[in-house]
Length: 299
Image 1 (cartoon, helix red, strand yellow):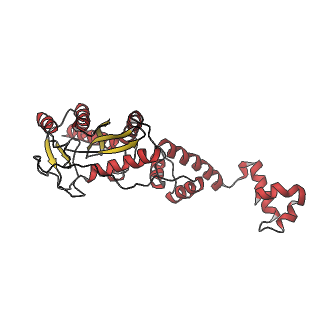
Image 2: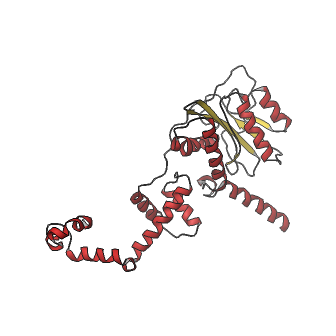
Image 3: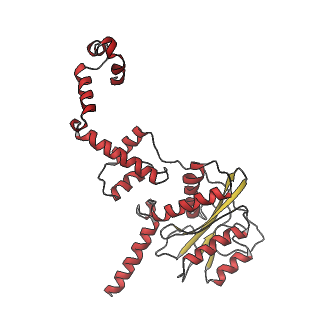
């Protein structure tokens, strides 16, 4: 209404317009006074202006995927004391929101004739330390130049992505390269279990022999069980929601690979994960090793 009065006040006058609208002339003049002197605004208006800028910043710094809950938690981590309902209100005003997850595509191709390792996990995706349990899976991405495939290896303790690879084929080399990166990144792996679904890539001789060479115990989920590799599917679901569906369409492999590189770095080092206490994976692992060191010194 204020903008309407501004447009027509020269022709009709403020009082005449206000007599036809549900606004008093004093309210209009007060609003205009605040425009010329922002210091006269109430504390809530000044606080909203500050928080609006901070909310926009946090949202943009986190790939524009955070909803109100994650934005609120990040602001609290940075020392900004704000209520969650305030974040929700200001995000609605800004017209921004978090991404919404969709259905995960099916990529598992099982070969009934292949020898399989036992299921050592049995849906219990918990770990007491890093490098106790890894889970692996891959997904596909449609691009202008054809399908590309993205494989991940995830450390269950803090959901840290320890290996990943992008390829134009979903043959064994894709998942093996992701495993090799994980082996390079994690040197201390005593008692490690590697869990996957029954995809033929993970049951191949090359893959199983590589794990045996490193002393890793293989675990394979139950055929047709939607929960047999649930944690890996959850991380891949986040990847598809926060990168692939959020930023597409994709031209080709290079574009997907570059985007995955940036997302993995953000995911491991800055993304807040609710299952591990709303901290980034790398932070939780640092806390574990710090506590382990302190307990050793105390002993």
